[in-house]
Length: 303
Image (cartoon, rainbow, N blue to C red; front, side, top):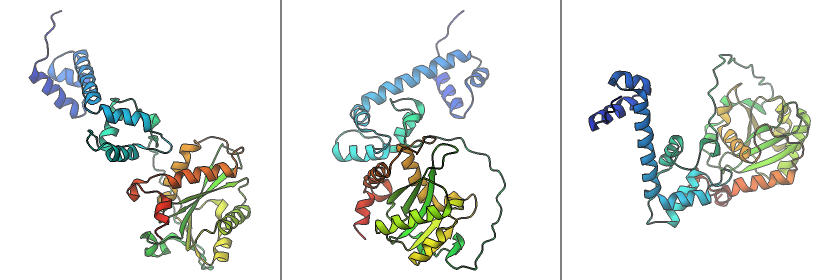
């Protein structure tokens, strides 16, 4: 069988069609060539790009290899620190590094990232309105939460959620997050009883002298009695709408960081409170992109 080398024009046509999202077999059919030719061309092209990247960003890739840690030092932090310490070296953007990872051009893979890509769940369409009991003014729907809370200009507006371990296990972790500083506190809970959870949260807040001006929680049954704590502290308790975890976005984001240390499905029975305190300290000491790579402790000291 005669072999004809791809011309530059043919290569441009292949690149154009592939960039449109067409499969290699479809492109081969359109151009009248065998699909294995396109496969070899694509493989050779990406191999060359990988070599070019390794040469051009050799110092950065070595720095990333030595310093990247999925728990405490993300891609964003590595890029930020590299720019500070290697001012004359070639440094890529954060998006560029993620593109390399997606294309398999550097040593990192998606399963080693801080946040794993999850399959998008189908919408159930079962969103229903919840009839709120407004007889007691301490517990209110989130729609009545004042607008100034959204501005995050003051410490004391907390979001509270629970982190579960293995299935059919009573042990859980209660996470408390300050909306302003993103500071997190973690509490070990051995039962899911609502009055037990309420007592644990109240005692922890008093013991650690946490400033509280409002509390936002979801509709979990473990928080049904949290209005007692809100009444004792003299603050309002706001409950999110059913199936609307995005209304506690800060809480969900920080829970994701906790999952770096305690993966989903791991038993929580043997995890002591002192270990949770260490995790909270690590997260609060971690540089955060939203604060221009300052930690929660540094932001808290300004208030």
